[in-house]
Length: 300
Image 1 (cartoon, rainbow, N blue to C red):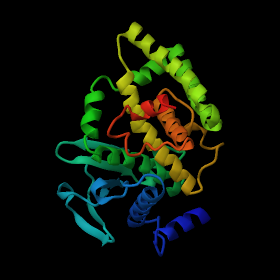
Image 2: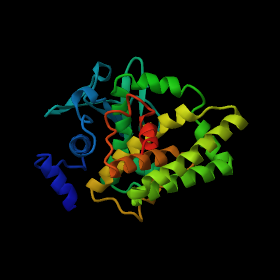
Image 3: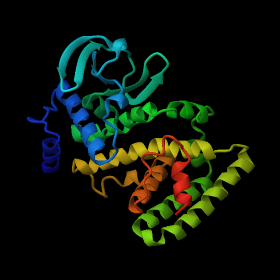
């Protein structure tokens, strides 16, 4: 693909990684991290923001830039990237997530493209698998930002499925978030009218939150703001990478923009797209203050 070839050439990867091999795939992931750092989110590929990547095959794991907890047989070392091979560390059949523990810190875990395809048939190639990895890897970057993980744990300490359950169980809630998302999309399409759209957006949003508090006794404001930042920014990075790789098309990737029961992915993502459209900088603020995106939108 021409776009991919130009991207890799820009990153001075010559020859391009052989993505039929484990080492080549991990090199490719790290090259794409560099591309995101250079074009989308500065600091993403900085060494201080890196987290170990555990790549799962059927009986083995490969760990990129391992911490001492992942000591193994070195299979590659060059250009700031070290890869070791270790026995498979668990029997969980499928991985695509970041976890964080006191002993290990944040760790990115992903299954191979072949294993991923067994659980997510819509992933036919490495170029579709890689943005999925990057979405999750971005969570590792988030957790490396000063104070963010502690804030994440503090705010998300109540039932983590609350927002999804509300959207799935109450038609009025789902109708509101669908309309809120539609207003974000209209503001992106017609930024000259963004102020009017955002006024209506927050009228709906504030009414929905107040009804949840009155009827359910749950204040969802802080958790909703948090999850829109966490998942919205990760989806934003995933989307930008699809575009970099020439994989994106509106017909194929409409799901990126539309709210499911986990509506905060789409609303957070579209909020960042609107801020981009209006030329409002947010990258330096949103992990230091999870209210930052909403504050910026309210100030339009």
